[in-house]
Image 1 (cartoon, helix red, strand yellow):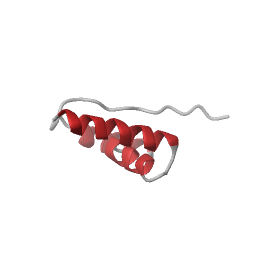
Image 2 (spheres, rainbow, N blue to C red):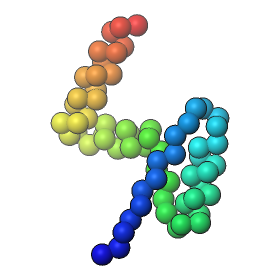
Image 3 (cartoon, rainbow, N blue to C red):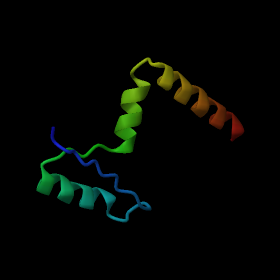
Length: 64
């Protein structure tokens, strides 16, 4: 089997995360997936995890 390495690029806003991820993606012929895309997929999945996230977000809104 092939060993697969997954990378996560983290940093503050406007620090170049997307740029470096795109460079790595191009060099390694891999996909770039952003956190907001993953959350969107989960929220649209009608899963137990989606329900938990929606409940958490609903509770957070009540705090403000």
